[in-house]
Length: 543
Image 1: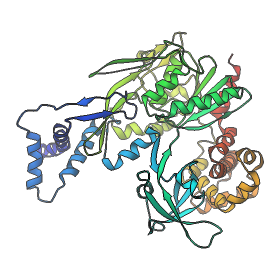
Image 2: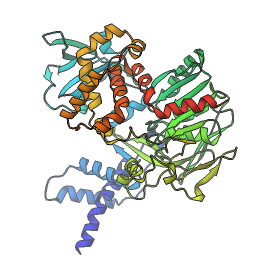
Image 3: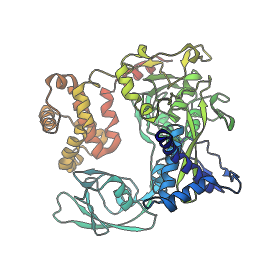
Image 4: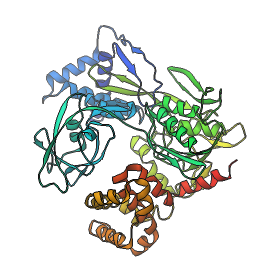
């Protein structure tokens, strides 16, 4: 009897979710969401008839339960639980979370235009977005925001979400911040009128050599294609004839953005991707006659955190024999979501199809063992040795596919690169990983920059000057090692010797980024980026 009772409790969240679906899906407009097909539609009533048994159950709980309950909270918990049972990518987004979840993909939001970090319980401005409201009123990188609209925000254990709520807001509205700035004894007030703040998906674009260009994308948003084309044309004007596209750590985004990007590389009529689901007809996407890099040599970099839209582009390039893929096996997310915005401002992202690469591969990894196991992939790959040796990866013969030129490619879980790059010994050494996991390289670089910001800006003027002139000497390196020892990472002479070059490079890169942004970050770590080095060697041999 007790076992049956427990089973009923297990199914209660699903019952509540069905109540919500039955009552609220009338006249809801479908909008484009993460990896969605981008079609507009209307969902109609489910037509359950006069007797709504599920709603009666919810009414009974609300009217008879021993303690007070929130019908709204029950509904939200129920829908979240229901979607969680389906797959790892079907999710419920509350009204409060909606803008935060969608702003990175839309390409803009309303706010004051700063990048910040909570450092020692205070809000520190890391960068001021060019052309934004904060730049126009004199806010500077390194400023500490102490008050917002007269209320103290320092030393109160404020969270990132709390900061966003205070600083973001509808364009045209005003907010007053009180700022502490080094060299000025008193706090001073800065009134800011909120405006539209652009977000970018392109991290960096620059020339690696006289003829090899490099572009790194962090996500696929509504503005990705325009950003990419603009950067591509600028690099071509500088003499680029070969391109390395870096999609490492790119978790995806809009399917449309991936399709548009792949079209830049593929000739007219080439298959890019197709999708299909039980309730969705097969939808096929082909390249058009428009494309600004259909013939130049192309290399794409991926790793275990490249997913979704990144895998669409990579799969299209690999399956069409258009370029060379270098790195480690990608994440393996081959599910397509549609986003439905509900009447109260919340939304549901529901998996409605799978996508397939041109050879017919579905590269979605199994999620049969649950969401937690699904997202523990990196740990499992590390333990199994996959990140060091591709031979540890086992593929069934049924998952083998052939490209038009006869190359064997695999489905069943991510995209295997054509050239495998293992984690380097210094990348996975215990000492180096400990420094990164604790964020000590970043924190030390931040403190150093905070003290020396103006001196560095005056001395090096721009990113190019910094890259050429600034060095992490032995004195600064040893200061960092002592700092790390005092902050939880015990001094390890073997680990230090093994990772010395990497530590110095990342210290310089983070210092450079704090002042000159990514223009002084990626060109610095290029020297210890073994995957990129291999890509340069490979693309140099391609004709």
